[in-house]
Image (cartoon, rainbow, N blue to C red; front, side):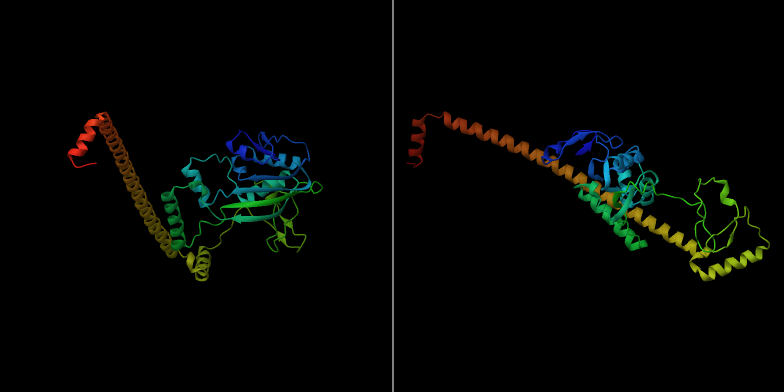
Length: 320
């Protein structure tokens, strides 16, 4: 069964065994446990209520069945470009890897079987070669100047399996041991949980953990000494080095902005040239049309000449 809010032309090309139904993902028209598989291909970012959609997918899947779900990475260059070019493009959610798995594990019995990271394809640019060229030029400039590969992690494919006996499986611990890193087993009540500042003893290593509300600074020279040692260990954190990095990134940003502006101007010139050629082609077509009409008029005049005059003219000019 294929599900969408509206009927599209492409439904005519569905094979005979596929049935189309109008509906929304938060209310799937199907019985509990009646589906062997569910596929949602780049759809979750368009759902007003992603959690409700996941709940419906869990409901209609039989126990042990699987769901194949793909989402864009809202933090990727590809998705940010899409949202800016098309005023959001219908993306109501801002999905990420962690966001999606939190939705899945906090409210459903779906479990992650596998996942794949997808590189950028910029398919929404279609056949606009100028825009595609500009986009890939920016991607290449980012790679060459700052070593950033803007193509990676543009989206994800998840394969989930329904395991009803396991139930929801997301747990957020309140705190971890500062010595061994083991969570204390207490479920978090959120960022404002009053227990987060209470002292506690780690059950794993026995270390005492406490979180003072303020950091006492006995001597400022000790702080300065600590900062110098830190700078010697990590030279890239020195203020002058950070200033150099900022200036370098600023220069790069200006160069990139200049290159983008040049590409925009080049694109505008091409569009103007295309428009001019289009007007020339229309004028040429109109001129050809007028010539055809004049040729038809001449042929009609010839056809109106009596046959005996045409025979006399042929003999006069040596024709047979």
